[in-house]
Image (cartoon, rainbow, N blue to C red; front, top):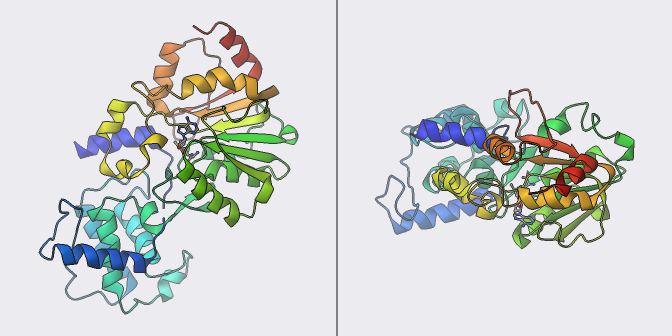
Length: 355
Ligand SMILES: C[S@@+](CC[C@H](N)C(=O)[O-])C[C@H]1O[C@@H](n2cnc3c(N)ncnc32)[C@H](O)[C@@H]1O
């Protein structure tokens, strides 16, 4: 069953990369409290308390700890869909974080186990296994489009397939000449990952990024500071386009919530650590996509482009609902799409006959 669920999650969220904050010390503290309250627990308890036994003997080197953590992760039957996809690389990543080892090729070879190594590992296992937190929330960071972002439970872990367009040297050029991109909008910005990656890819453009969640906007603000984008990236609280009256863009990107309620309920625990409002979009996943399609033409310049993620299942639902929707599904290297592109004019023409 778990296997199936994982497969389904991958279908919905493939193309992911992972990785958020809490320092090792924070977890040591949290862990100490959890263990104090339930000293005999060796499995996740009702409160999520999880107190694994230390390996005997304690590994002397970092690789030994990585192997131990990988074993624990494997046994715990976790979902790796929003992260490193496999126990060993995730263990490597988590142990490096817990031991303050830089993520650099040679760092692991010369790294030493800190004196409180076991306590640090215990804390990370409590978070990852006991609370089923995705690794990104354990470390407080996520990698997206080659950049490192601050994340926490106020935002979705960055993994939008739109990243594949940013990675592609052709970028948006089949539809939009690079030189004409002066204004960009990211609708539902979460951590700000897409808005920031776009601001870095289009250094002459001004970027607006909106979200309905105040918490998400706080995280996006931290990331804006981290990348020194200042006034070039404007963050606004808005219910879709509501705060953007009269604003027009050359490029609008969106990775809106699109998970149908019944699918959301079946997702593994890791997904339930993420904000529900970042994922769920009504019974068929179209609650936000429909108004985006309807309203985007009013906010695009002539020849402007809307690029939007829907995931594979909702791609099918969308096309069954509106077979004449004039969108182009982008062919990705992994053999699926789930992201469409459409220019203002065809979308406007389609909207004129909107059922
Ligand atoms: C799937 S997450 C995407 C976050 C980010 N763009 C990414 O790709 O990681 C969707 C985001 O839309 C925001 N959101 C949900 N409903 C919204 C609405 N009505 N108006 C604006 N943003 C909304 C959520 O708070 C969430 O941050």
